[in-house]
Amino acid sequence: MKKLLNWIKNNKFSSLLILVILVMLLFKNFTGGTNYLTGSRDTAEFAPVAMESAPGKFAEIDQNSRMVVTSSNFSLLVKNVTEAVDSFLLKAGELGGYMVSKDISMEEYAYSARISVRIPSDQVDDYTYFLRENSLKVVSEKIDGTDVTDQYTNVNDRINRLKETIVKLEEILDQAEDIEEILRIQQRIFSVQDQLDSYIGQKRYLKETVDTSLISIYLSTDELSLPFTPDEPWKPANVFKRAVRSMLETAQGLGSLVIWIAAYIPLILLTVGIFILIKKLIRKKRNQ
Image (tube, rainbow, N blue to C red; front, side):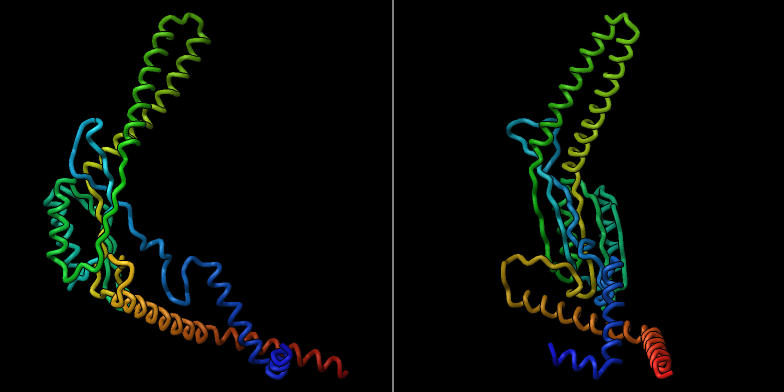
């Protein structure tokens, strides 16, 4: 500690310069949503989007039928990003699906894109086959399923009970004679109807997510820029890919740091100049 203090006393200019740089970098990192050292965006942006699909359509739930919502994510290496995006969207339309979102960007190393399409459940196999056949490589493919049968059944039961409640309230309303009582019952009916409409919307949403599948597709001409989900816990090749990604991010961060320092040199010099000037004025005043 003593050596550090002595170094600071003997190298005041360097110490001040380092302090100013650290303060500016910390201020920028803590006040912005973007990491300016690495130039990366929030990882949540690349997080997998929940997608739904199911093997078939049905009317109501019984003990032998299940409602399964699946999430599907593909990372594809392609030769040309824009052509691949157009091809995938065109195929989705041919199968009765449609585009949900599209984002094409030019990253530092390659073009990349992310699209989401909703496909009829009975056409999902054909569409995923088309994705595999029209890409250079499937870097990763992940499908997770969630059973929502119980949730659908509960919503349906609540809808039936609310409908019965409205019928009973309307019967009471027909027999009511007092104006205040009539208004109170009508208000109660409106409240129950609002709850009923909400549950009907939930039921419709659950059925739609079963009848169609939302598939998220990441595309790039650079395999290292694609989101990656390993199929096995550990593979040397996968570890090497992640190491290369980390190395590139570190190099990019160092480059960004150099640029930041170069951009702030005028301000740093101005600050140091003012500090030296003030120090000289103080010394001059003391000598007088």
